[in-house]
Image (tube, rainbow, N blue to C red; front, top):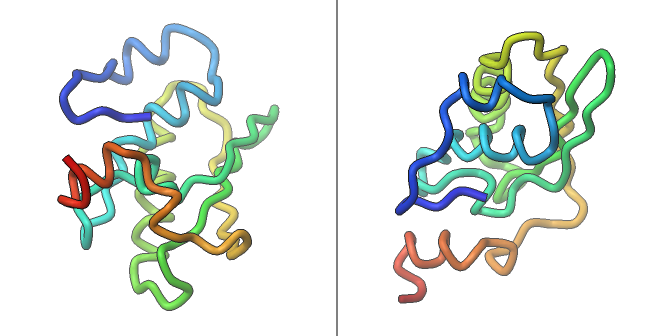
Length: 117
């Protein structure tokens, strides 16, 4: 998960090893929901990552089914992950179950939104 107070490894550092779920989640910490100003990992929008030989599948949701940012976030996830050399295809699997709720946010996201100290 991301942490706004700590520097994160750059793509070059991450590319030094194999593509793992941790590497993917670290990179996805750079994908910011522009309406909320918080990354999609801390918001709890990323439900899972599957790494295959031909594709990395990111299973995620949006805060609401009518969220106008779906295409934008899909593009940002793809842009973010294709920075890694040798990254196979990136597929975003947009799902609606379980339905997202604010309870899925990390404490860091809640702090960033002013919901906790």
